[in-house]
Amino acid sequence: MRMGEGQRSPAYCTILALRNPRAWVWPRPCPASPLHDLLWSLIPSGANARYSVWHSEPSWPLLPCLSHPDSPAHPLPWGSPSAFWIDPTTDRLSFLLKVSKVVVLGDLYVGKTSLINRFCKDAFDRDYKATIGVDFEIERFQIAGIPYSLQIWDTAGQEKFKCIASAYYRGAQVIITAFDLADIQTLGHTRQWLAEAQRENEPGSSFVFLVGTKKDLLSGPACEQTEMDAVHLANEMQAEYWSVSAKTGREESSAASQEGASASSPGCC
Ligand SMILES: Nc1nc2c(ncn2[C@@H]2O[C@H](COP(=O)(O)OP(=O)(O)OP(=O)(O)O)[C@@H](O)[C@H]2O)c(=O)[nH]1
Image (cartoon, rainbow, N blue to C red; front, side, top):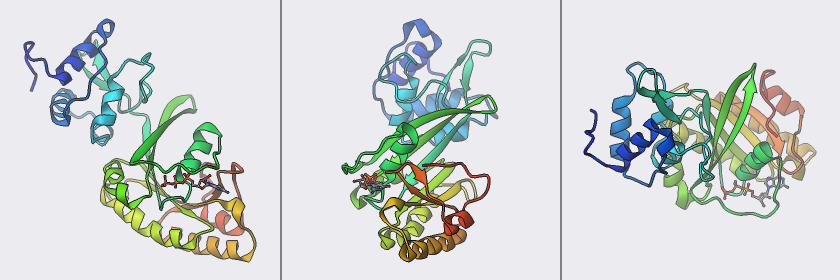
């Protein structure tokens, strides 16, 4: 389906803007379906970008990626897998794919936002500000000279936001389930969080991490016991286990967490 020149839906205007970078218009919010339909119809058949792109629904977060890289408002870097442009040689939409979507889940107050802030900004805030719905950060880096972006989705732990946050689980290459090492109940709840995220994804399509937070708050036998429990649960979940402190900024090694973490795993905090 290609829309005719006479049609001027917001999605179509966006495509026109993409075709002519000198005439960029900042996309305005528009209903998800016209944009979805139009873009879907333009994706080259066989493009393996489909998966990433269409899992960025619901589509309001898709809209900012249509804006110009120089726009101060753009929250997604140009070149993320959710970003697309018209390839002048083929006149088709093209995609950059080197993005991984990470979702961070867990009970309220376990320290999900703090974990992300430490990772992305190397900062820690002791004041609690509950996440409303979802938030996200982009972290860009290179591995062997190849640029990658991590699209990190911070979900709210509060029950009332669950239905909003769960809409963002789809297409996650990485699922991080966080619990508070100082609050053992939150460990038990990680099973449920993971089940909900996995329900939205193909079986085996996501790497799973179980992360115990606030390691600085406890030590001694109680901590070791919690970590042992966490490692066992991580094995059940087929997850990799980490104990971390966003406050100190360190992954704190312990016998239990060493046992749970694989040698190839990247340090988080
Ligand atoms: N001591 C200590 N406190 C932490 C650590 N991580 C987070 N906190 C504190 O725990 C509180 C909750 O942290 P958040 O990161 O906002 O928790 P959250 O899981 O994102 O909470 P929701 O957005 O409600 O789901 C804040 O007051 C943080 O400062 C840590 O590693 N050590």
